[in-house]
Image 1 (cartoon, rainbow, N blue to C red):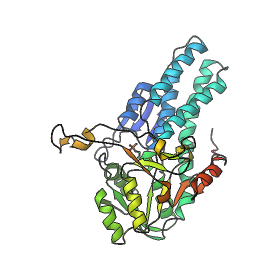
Image 2: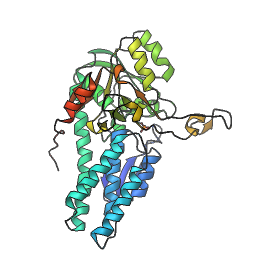
Image 3: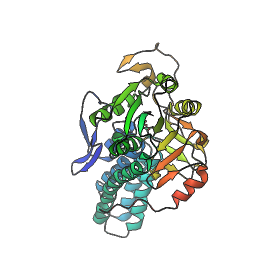
Image 4: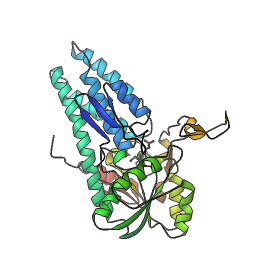
Length: 353
Ligand code: MRU
């Protein structure tokens, strides 16, 4: 399985996702500013991976604070958290991770500072392991929902590369294939950043899972031709009522699925569920650089100074979602109720801490 990110003594190591699929290059971020840049520039991307990267960024930042008192350490720590939390706005896992690191710090703030630093590093490493465990659990819960034979469409990349490993939506597909199902994946290329063609096709092909790449505007026709039996995507933030923010284009796919009577599933760890956001209208949507739309592989493909909009995410209303697959179980409509029930469940236990 591809190593998306890893804590090492030299720094946080990421596979550079901006270089895939043509180059497999790893970058080592030696301080928290470099981790923040890696998140901002999408060297690392995908909500759960961003969460773990954020935790590691906070840990490396805390490690490097040269403190003489806990007050001074706290000031440095707050600044690290502020910078990491300011990198990208939509994936709630980022804020969840920073908050978790802050809580761990508060709980241990009476301990000697060198010990606090070790505890924070251990917490970040633990979140890495936990994320993979959550994805495997999601796979177990979700695999049964996929057809025993047929086409499954996915949008963007919700795979090993979007997580600490195994993947959310692609984790469910992996688990279904491991259980003997005959799944053929259709991967939307996912304009403008092309996570589908650059990342999803790459990682599924590496695993030998049959994958067909299509451009985004082909999805409806593939459904009309009977080639798609289910859709499964990841999520960047799920509101308390089930409305789900995911990569731009997901909303259109959900409507196409509805029209063709195809179940549309969302797979995400519970850290993506934001019970404090009541519905999708309150989810902040990141607007990214216009060059992502006007340029392709560094080449200009639109008139100079062309007016552009580039929202990186859209919101799929809960009414189009057949089920939300989490590591705690599967939520179905009414999502307000089912998500509240899952929120009360204990987190997936991970042995090694
Ligand atoms: O902008 P990105 O690439 O960080 O977008 C996030 C995503 O990869 C997706 O929206 C994904 O489907 C959900 S994260 C598993």
